[in-house]
Length: 165
Image (cartoon, rainbow, N blue to C red; front, side, top):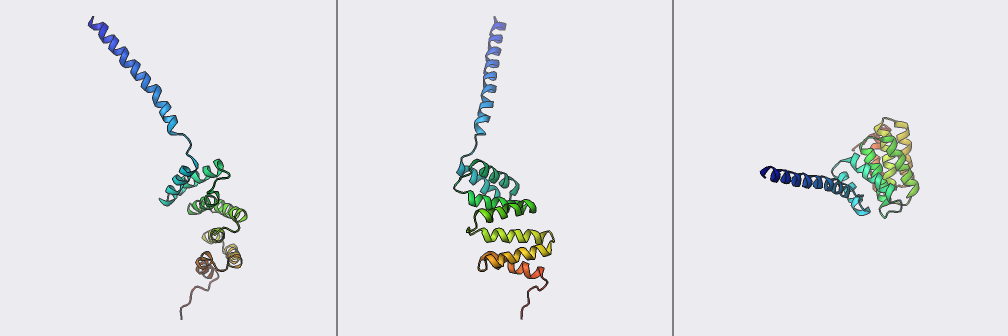
């Protein structure tokens, strides 16, 4: 009789364990539900603010893919390129900054996009191209914070440096 009780108890435990295993995959699938627009943007921003540019870039890219008419698309397009720049993925960053300028020419970030195009060439020691790109910035956005930030880099490229009298 005791053997029978032990077997029944073991069967009950095994059944409960099997049921628990069946529930766990469902819970994991539920945890992987795609984030809504705002949550995805917030997750990307959190990564970017913590300097996790690779993860932020991936999340921004997902945002652009999933929400082609998203209300934060302009901002996401810019910061995705910025994350690429921070990772020194200069070719990709330039491509996306140029697309940003084409898509959002009146954006307050358009001059900054040009700044990073020029700076990426300077970072790669491509002096002549960088000078040309800085000149575009000065011509198209003369009175902007991006232009003010670019002056020092530009003058160092052309060999003038700053002179204090």
